[in-house]
Length: 314
Image 1: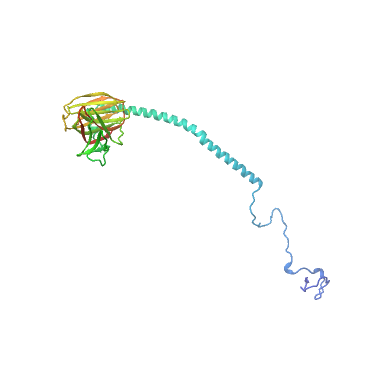
Image 2: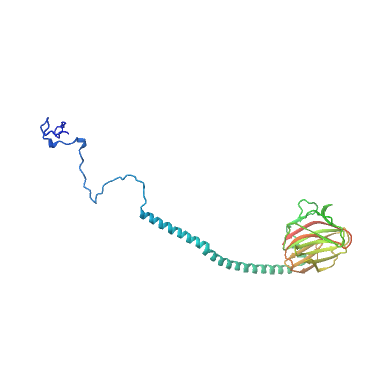
């Protein structure tokens, strides 16, 4: 304890200060320990308090609210998912059906118009003009048929026939009398086309080309060594003659070159020999297929040589 008047240290229980004789009730704790005046706290003047940083805790009310929001979010997402999976496809199907119907109607109308325009355009041209137009572009197949490399036709052989490159040409050979053989170009599916090839009948009766070749049949355009031409349709192994006859454009006899060309657009088929028109027919049995080379005989061995095969897609 200390005297409040002179600051002398006082012993406990002393009634007066031995130095200045002041009464002991004025004795208090050390000056640096004296309390500070207190402040009156009012609602208008809140205390300036700096709370300690405590770990944040989520109240039960807030947790419940978050749970509700999460539940609503899940329900909302599920609802969107159901709308996308169950509702939208039904709408899409209805819309797609309408669009498809319109598209098919448009395509059908467009196809009919295209065929009508092609028919009108073709009808307005002479056969020679049709040939010039059909063969004036860049051919899809341009095969000299002199070597195997790069050719659309393959070398094949058996005890009955051979398809081989020999002497700068592609040969179809066989010994059977009254027989025929065809060699199909791979990767040669066409619809409207112009197909042209040069051939020589070295031995046998006839040679030519086939087009729109399918599993059910094909068209065959050929010439024989007697200066006759013919266009057959083979359907289910049954041949039917569409047109044929003699023509001065054909080089008759053996070892004579003849250039055969067919132009097939829709159901119109035009035939040319040595670039001269010889006939045209209308037939719609086959509208697409592959192309092939063909040889046939009636007696004796067969050997037909082919060169310069070209196919234009029309």
